[in-house]
Length: 394
Image (cartoon, rainbow, N blue to C red; front, side, top):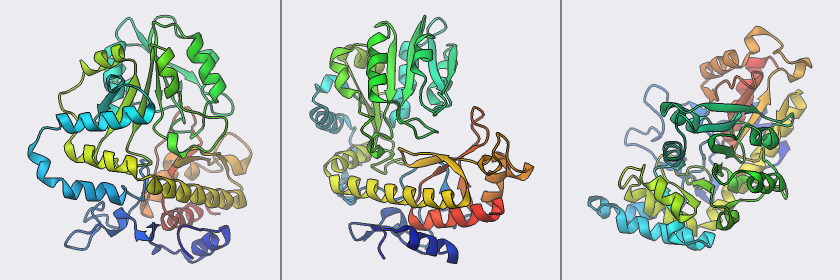
């Protein structure tokens, strides 16, 4: 059995014996994060006090960066003394070509999080509010609040998608509408026809920021990127990241696509040279390694399918995932809106899982019975399910 072809039967067998030693493979090689070791033998991402923690709380890509990205960084260590200007220009050219836009319509960032921050600074204020879904990725809301902007939260639909008609109704006096698609933490997609209609109806004076951090994981005919709409909508900004499918969360690299005038306004809020050379060269190499992207997507999809089957067998409801994480309803086995027992509330389960060396996501007040879990490797999800069964008494 290899990690590239994983049946439910083999996955269940691993769970039944509590197997933790499986090592993920990418193109026949040990995944970068598993092979990277310090001289003392500890994994580079572990700390001496917690060497065996399974971290499924931050939506990181457990398969690590492309081997080509690792090689690019190694080959370019000697550039560390240089400011990144012209190297950033080369990555900008690559991205512009990939998206069929001009380089003036691309802005690199220190992760897409920096771009969310500068967007809040450029387009929200005390009299320009921010409209977001509830729940969604909350970084831009915190940045807008720093600038004394009002943040209006609109609950998701019953099937956990953005309620775009209700969001549109809140846009009078809005500086920015933020749409995370696929959404974090629900891993749901907002259909392409609804996105297109919303963008067309929104006032040109209000910016719509679409965060496509999890774009590469989606396998649905009901979804498509809105980057092609940038050409015809002057108020559209689309953010992307290298943290997810490209496995570069620790390197901090993202970018956005928008018309040149918006890029100028965003850049005016940005720190000079905020993206480092190692991230840039790794990013350029990653764009060319489509095989690594496809393998990562394939492994993620296989593991989601098998974890979903295990949860089905246990009687737990979950939101179907279009990303590298999923939301599990801890109340679903009781048929109500409350956990089966006090020790099965989301905070209690998170704490109990941590004691078993498995870290899972935080509480989202808008969905109080749901627990977010990052989709890790085969062995990591085996550890998760083993601990989850013990904690929940399954």
